[in-house]
Structure formats: C-alpha cells, structure tokens
Image (cartoon, rainbow, N blue to C red):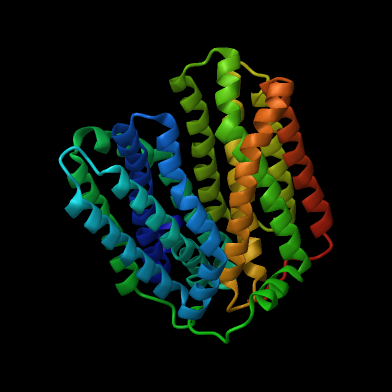
Length: 399
C-alpha cells in the first residue's frame, strides 16, 4: 500500500527521498561534530559547548525563518538553505587538516548549521502539506515521520562507523555530497501544480501569531505538543541515563532500550501512513495515554520489561505525534504553515532544555523511578485531556 502510494504521488516520493538524504547528512554531521570536538579539545565541557553553539542562532532566527519560508515558498527556502549547508560543508572539508577540523572551524560550523536550520527546518516540514491533498495529509505525515524516526535510530550507528574509518576531510566531503544530492533532488523533482507556498502578502509577526493561535484546535494541539515534548525529552534525554545508573545497566543496555523506543515510533508512523485512521482526536488522546503509562512502567521495571515498555511507548508516541502534527497542519491557513511550525519548534526547543533540568531535579529529590512516574502520568493525563477537549470541536480544515 505504501509503495503504491509513493508511485502514485511523484512529488511526495521525491520529497521523502530528499528529506531522507537530509536526515542522513544531519545525523552524520552532528555525530562527527561531537567526536571531532572531543578530539580537538579533550574536554567534555568544551565539547558540549561547541555542539550547543548552534542553539542560539537557531532559536533567535527560527520564527523569522519560518515567516521567510512562507514568503519565498517552502520548496525554494528548503533548496536554498540546503545548498548553503552543502557550501558550508565544502568549505570546511577544503580547509580541514589531516588531524581534523580546528576548534574555530568546528565552532563556526555549529553556528552556521544552527542559523541555516532556522530556515531549513520550517520550510522542509511545511512541504508535507504542499505535496499532500487534505485527505492524504495523515498518510504523508506518517511517511515523513517514519523517515525521520528511522533516521534517528539507524543513522547514528552508520555515522559512528564512518567517523571511525574515514579521514575527517573525506567524511566532510561525503556529508557535503549527500546534502547537495538532497537539495538537488528537491529542486528538480516533480511538484504539484496546486502546491501551497510561494509569495504571500506580508503580515506582521503579531498578526501571524494571532491568526495561528486563535484557532481552538491549533491551541490544543500546541499545548499537547509542548507537554509531550517536555515529558518525552526528559525521559529519553536524561531519564534513562539516571535509571541505568540506579539499576546498574551499562551503556549498551541503555542504548537497547532507547533503540526500541525509536523503532516502535518508526513502525507506528508507517502504520498510520498505511491505515489512515479516522476519529483522529480519539487516536491522539489514547495513544498519548498509552505512551505515558508505558514510560511510567519502564521506570519501575527490570531490563527486559523496560525494553518492552519502551517499545510500547514508542508505538504509542509514533501514532500520537504523527496524527497530532497532521491535525496541526490541517488547521493552518495557507501562507502561515512554516510560521506555525516555527512557533511549534521554538516552543519545543525551550521546553526540551527545561525538561532536562526538571527531570534531574525530581529524580534527585526522590528517585529516577518516581520521576518516570511523574512525567509519564503527566503525559497520559494530557492525552486524555486533549481527547476530551477536542471531541466536540471537530477536525475540520482551513486548507
């Protein structure tokens, strides 16, 4: 069913191929960045500082980047930012020494990638709505999410192998070529005649935000997205490391738990693409609740049960996030898609950082298992609240 869907929609297939290559380039780049930074500085603190340098320009430019993507057109903005990304990698590869990039070069690359992503991310994510008719949005979002989640699960292992066997200059050239191929595939690929995007009348930031947030379904979707990002980031980013220390799991055992979570999310996103479930709010609410309960159970379980619970959490989270983003996209008015996605991403980035700190604080004052229960139950309750609050609003669409 999925293969026939791709064959029947050339623009969607070209976009997903392009996006998949972009995910590979990003994942390999960030693994290499952290590895080369550690080799250049021999300091955990300095490595973390270099990797995080891109966060500030990304946060500052994300909302303007989304508004610019809406004005330029989502495909155009994605192609331009992708080509700039490839150019940055080409310069870095050309200047790279035999021992790897210098600290200054690594810092410059991190800042440049953060700034580029402020235009690339909202533009690329918005193409999901451009290449899908309204009745195909859940399927297209499911395929997009599956590519994204599969990349985050599978590519880091490939990146680790590449860093180990390739010289730094060769690796950077390889990533550059993948990024270039991603941009060219999107640039020359087929497109829908009625594609959304392109030049739109300029509006103020306040007017754009007001147009987005006045819709009650969008507001509820955004609230659930923030809670879900907050809970999942705390549990996966900090929680499993603290839980592993409490239970005596080694790094490989912790990695197996996280891998099963990611694999479950990728599989369920594909299932959504194939099944296209109706009664969307019920599926979003119930799958979010399942994810939250599974997270809570994993915090009080031994390793085999924790692996299974993480898999169930991934299955629930994949369904929830795919349908939630599809619903969010379906309610956004034409000309504000990338701006709305920038709002969502900007809020999620801030929420993620706070989540790491708060999870650690709860765990420190109690135990990691208690923190899992608190975050998991909060996620489950938010899913049920969303289900109840949206049941009478209807899905609708503004597209």
